Image 1 (tube, one colour):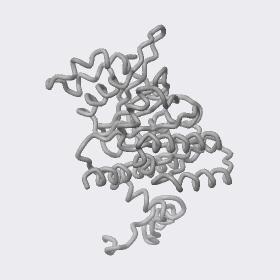
Image 2 (cartoon, rainbow, N blue to C red):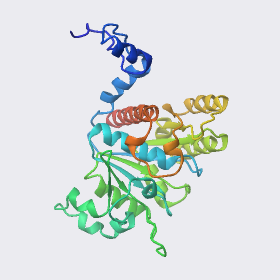
Image 3 (cartoon, rainbow, N blue to C red):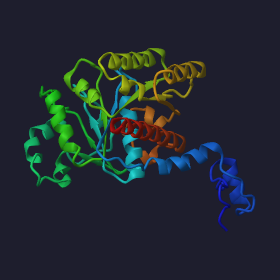
Image 4 (cartoon, rainbow, N blue to C red):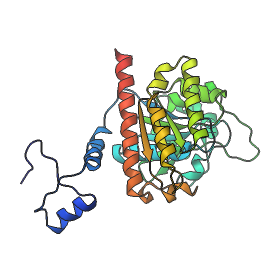
Length: 309
């Protein structure tokens, strides 16, 4: 029998879900608030956009969790939306996105793609031609790694970034762009200044959090106040022993200046620095990543509405 209109669906998580299973559904304990939010989020994250969206993950402080958050967001969007999502390492030097992603059958990277960009500027180029440059992941997204060839000194400048973004935007609905630590590098500013949404990752450390806040002020001073105010902060608990007082202080401080703040729980599989497979992440982290993806989709939707007004 269907639930009455407006009724909360039966729980599947925790003690509520166990009670429903033990009683074969006779108890019909409703889902709790977190489970309800997750169910709504699974639908909400599917929102369509009229143009490719650029989500830039940025915090000039090393160790802020930029790469894990980039992978987590791209994997979540790919998993629920069924593909057309790219995680792109736009580090000005040697980034670690390729090292943290699942292994690929080749080692070509963003510099190799830029050197071959002319072949993608004609109308006959298709997503299949990207296969020699991107690294498919099991969560239905692709990775474009930064250059890590020993001895090579190529640097992606602003023009190169825009060429890549224009071509990749033909094939991907979402580009989640990892960045380096130098806010004065040409490709950092090219990415952030053209972003549709900025995600500010931080760990539960005062210096990391303050650097992210400084960057938002930096963006505002350079004319992107809208981007700073519409940002999403993602606070990662990178240590199993969390300073809850500091965590609360960081969350409250960010809530004063950004659109939304999402906290990611500790997960040893993400914190050891090894390769990240979405399926292997714990359920609490995957659920929180969905809430982060929903916050990003909401921010993108609000930005699109403002541009169209």
